[in-house]
Structures are given as C-alpha cells and as structure tokens.
Figure (cartoon, rainbow, N blue to C red):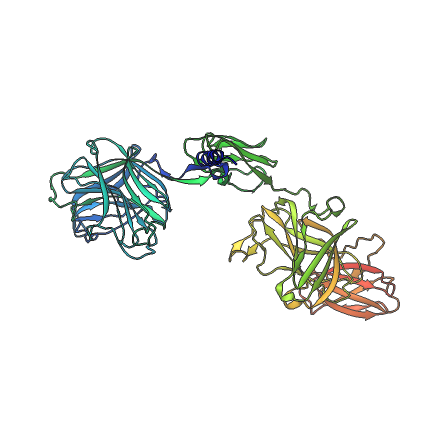
Length: 606
C-alpha cells in the first residue's frame, strides 16, 4: 500500500473524533444566589473558629451569622468586620462545600468582585475532602484566586503539594493584572483534568500546572476536592504590610458559582421513577444539565408538565396511563432525543383482583431457579403454573419469582391469596410468599406469609394472608417499609430453611388473587364438592358436624386461617370435636372419605 495513503488515513483518524469518544460539559453543581437570607444549607457549610488558621490571621470565622455571610439582591456577600468576637478583633466567614459539593476534575467558576484595603485577603480556593495523602500540604491545595489588598489589581493563582509549597519556597504560582478587581465582577475559573490544572481570569489562562506523573508529592490531585470562599484579615501574607483599621467592613460579592464536569455523550440519560401511581403529582424527571444546550420535554397524554419546561429538569403531574417521558436536546455534540419509559401502577377494582393468567401469558413474568445445588423449573400446563423442584440445600432459601406485568397499588386490596394444589408425596412442600416493591424491598419482617399444604390429594385451595400493617422490610435495608402503592411482584420460597429438607416434588398454582378480605382457605375448584353443617357456630368449647359423609372411617381435619393443620381425628359417625384448646379465630373443617371426596365447612372459635 502507498505510504502517502497510509499517512493520510492516520492523519484523518487523528483529526476526526470518534462519536463514542465525544464528551460534553455538564453543570453538576451551582448556586445562582437567587434567594435571600443565609447561604443555602444544602450547598454550603462553614469552617468556624479563630486561632490564626496556621497563618497568624486575625479573624474569627462565624457559623451561619448573617452579618458575615448572606444573600442579597442576587449576590452572595461575605463580609469581614472589625468587632470583638470570641476573643478575636475581627469576624468573617469561610464558606465550604465539603460533603455538599465534592469533585474530582472539572471546571469551577466563580463570578466575583473583591474587597479592598490593606489587610484584606480574600480567596476562592479548594482543599481535599478526605486528606488521603496526609495533612497540608501532602494532600494538596488549589488556589483559584487569591488577592492581598496591599497589592491592588494583582490576582494570584497557585497550587501547593508536598514537593511544591510556599514553606519550602517551591510553590507553583502565577499572577495576572486585574486593575478593576475591586470595582467590577470578573470570572475566576479552574480547569482540572488528570493531566493538568489551568487557572483563568475572564477565560484568559495565565497559570498551568502539569502532572509530572511521579507520585502524590508532585500530584495529589487525583482525589476529590471541595470549594472554599472566604475573606481572611491580616496574616503572614495578607497582613505583611499591616492592617488598616479604618477600612472595615469589607465585602466580597459573588454573583454565581458553577461547577462543570465532562462526560461521554453515551452517558446522557433521563432520570426519574420507572413506576408512578395513576394521577401521582410532583414527579420529577431530569437529564444531565448540558452546558449551552436547550431542552424540550414531552410527556404522555393525560400528564402535565407543572414546571421546568425548557430546562434540564421538569416536575410532572401524572395521568392514568403509562408512556414515555422524552426530552429533545439541541446541542452540537449532545443533540438528540432521550427517552425514559414510565409504567403506571394498576389500581385494582372490585373486592377481588386476579394477577395471573397462565392461559394467555404463559410464563411471562415468572422466573425459576437454576443455582446449584437447587433447581426450581417452571412450566405452563394449560391454565396452571407448575413448579417442579429438586432441593438439596434448603438453607439457601430457594425461591421462584412472579413479577407482575405492571406494579399494583395494594392500598385497598391488602390480602394476598394463592390458589395452590399439590400431592406432596415427598412431604416437603413448605412455602412462604414475600411481596416486593419497585425498589426491591421485601415483606420479610415477622409475621410473614408462611403456608403448608392442607390438602395433599390434588385439590386446589386458597392460602391467604393480609399484609395490612405487615409491610415491614429488612431487605435490602434494615427497618424499612415496603411501598404498598408500588407492589412489583411476589417471591415464593419452597422447601426452604429450617423447614426444608432434601427432596424433589412439584406443586401447581392456579391463581394469585388480591382481595379486601381473606378468601377462605377451602374453596375447592371443583363445584362437585359439597359443604356440610357445623353447629354451634360460633362455638367456644366444641362443635358437631352434620354430614352424610360420616359413614365408615373418614378423616376430619381442622385447619387455621394460615393453612396450618391444627387437629385431625378419624370418625365413623356423627362426631363432637373439642375446640377449647384452639385460639379464637376463623377455622375450616374438611372431611376426607375413603373415595377421596372432600366436603368442607367453616366455623368461628370464640
């Protein structure tokens, strides 16, 4: 191949950027000071105290004191005053973004007007948040702007490290002339990358510090730093020519502070909830605040943008349908449409609401288990969901999961009912059901919905639990509550924990139903199965059964509302059953004949 051609291709690759590598500048933190009063507490904190601050300074930095730090007429004012306070002759403020704004790399801007007079020492600067490499100067310092009043019109930019600092006389620094720094606003800015630090005034770069790629002693600037705004009084540098006692108070005005970082275009995405409730109000969606971009939002029919159109963040009052929230960005690199699909929670109607339709949806939403040594295999059999399991390590809490097609609001229908059938030939069918919300929180605080098969002969029954006041969750965070307005699905544990044993078996689920009351645990699916009379009902000490099925040896079982067998007798005639030892509550009774026909009834124990 021709060498000239190869060189041309290489040159073209060098000048034409790959789209996947394109980066854009985004605003990640800012304060425009468009309010009145103390500085915003979610953005600013205070360094407080006197004692000279290592430089023999004269001021006491106060905490949230409006005389020293306040916002008026769209400007932050930091004011140094001559007054006795906590043993110091002067007061001032030192505002910090520590733990409220901490960054690694980016562009920091402050548009400010500086104080004047001998003895003033204002600064816009940065210190490390975590001091990873040790105390000053080991972990570094970045001075975006320093100004000493006895040298008017000269602005300084500097860095300090263990190798380069003013104590050793090796500091890296530069100056620029700003004659009207005390009477006009100027933009003081920092550009910080892994390779270098640049410092600007009004976008004129006058200082560069390069990464020498040696060690932290020359470049500790690979850790997060925070921003500091302050006026010092006097000190080793600010007071080198004394302090004029007649110039106070002195003020530094700041019109805005903005912090930008650079991200890949591929990282731009719409943030906000994936699920909302019908007619939910005050829902926020946003996208990274790309500098110099315009934003145009659209929402589904029935939803209304309450505020924020034209910005990177909107507040929406939702409607009753799901759909896409989209924003069209106009920008040379980031231009395009960005979308987030939002699902709306279903609000069940009526007093019963089915969540399952295997006939139409098959295994949609179901997930089995294939984590050695346990397996749970799911299959659709006509209208039924069949779960076949082989459990050899029940202490791993094996489970399978059903995720609903859309989240469900269970604020009105709080009872979960599972219609299940099993033959339980292995005597190992032990189950528990935990609901989970759209944030992944599980209803795993006692009491939980634990149930055992009360009919091992292939007959469907409802197993029920009312989650009202039982929304406690310890997973994934301890002591939380499940959001019952956004229930995303149910996790079924089978043959698990201390109740489990090594075994293989299967079970079938016909329906998963929400209701406003517990469905009786004996509601056989076959209409042929009859009911019988129980008297007295309610009862306190005994019950009698009137049934034609009481001929020959039959089994009579009493089961509590959780599906647990609490009493069983064999009878061949009308029988009186002692219930005085049972707790008060609702119970069901069934008769199993030699032909396996089932009759059911229920009673209330008082």
